[in-house]
Image (cartoon, rainbow, N blue to C red; front, side, top):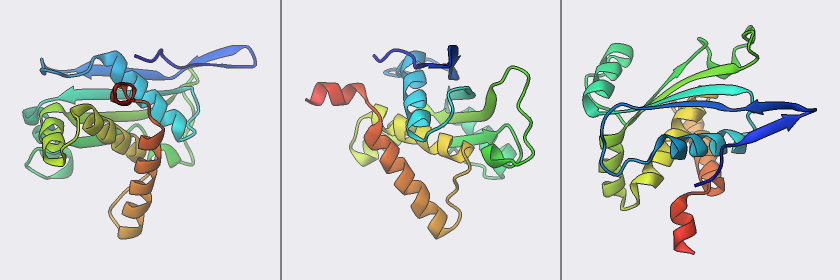
Length: 175
């Protein structure tokens, strides 16, 4: 496992604050440190300042279905949801940084059972699917969307570029 990312800028140390909650006992689920490392790598690959905070919740189908119904009006489970801390996401022009100096991007919620199903459908490891979903959610927090074809194309290109830069434990075992 990779160590947490730490940054020093002119003698001041900044750490990305990645809060991870695993809401359930999911067989084969990576630990919180794995998710932190993937999120830090993805945000760094996107050029995000190290003084950011993101929350990640891994949950089951019931909870994500409830959230999808409540906030998106879709009464079905989904794979990933992203909730901005500011109304317009990270691109908010009038955003005033909080006193702690951290930019609070928002929260990414992933359905672990849905990730397992999609990994099986795609024929790749669950960790790869979890990485893709986490990257997808983080890109939403950074202002990316996929409602229009051009937006979708740009978001998929960024996902692929970030995925190619992220170091996964499977990569180490394949070589």
